[in-house]
Length: 83
Image 1: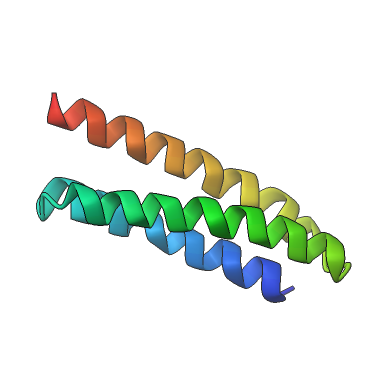
Image 2: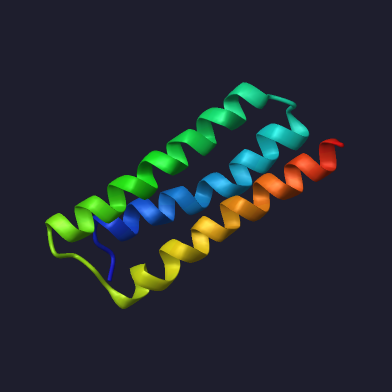
């Protein structure tokens, strides 16, 4: 269950609270941007690695889109809180 793509997705999931903390509490928009950018890069990489190494899993198929939605929700929450 814990392969390279799932590990990348897990690390990306840790970026959601880090993004919110940096954006809302520390008021560091540039750092927040880099966290979001790193999330996008790891999202791309986990899919490429999963297919290249044939390391797809049911867990990854469900967890990856969930983390994607968490990032979307975090950005919406952060922007709504700033306005």
